[in-house]
Image (cartoon, rainbow, N blue to C red; front, side, top):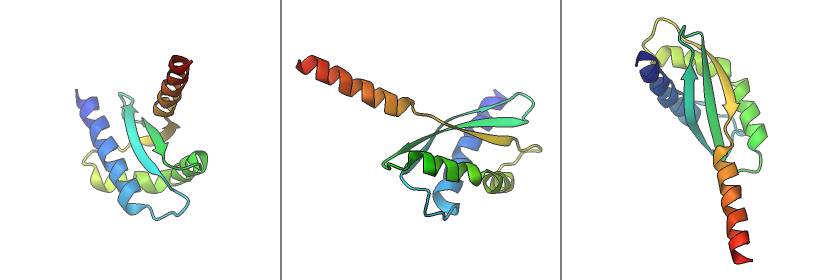
Length: 111
């Protein structure tokens, strides 16, 4: 239960940091934190990110990864915890894949 609460707090604060604090023009599009999985020892947090509305998805993702130390520093200021986990970002393309599959099914239905 405690890990679930920490995951939700990390998800909320990282979303806020990316949206409000990072002023990098290379980070474009709509960025959504889809989930966070923190290890039981609180050493690592795997953060899954979806990026919409830009053709520069991988560039945006790489810029977010480059900002991970800043994000972790800001997270330590916001999160009331003894240990702040190292952040590992992963690109979550499940929404993009689902959208693609919906288009394929639509085309098959039309034929």
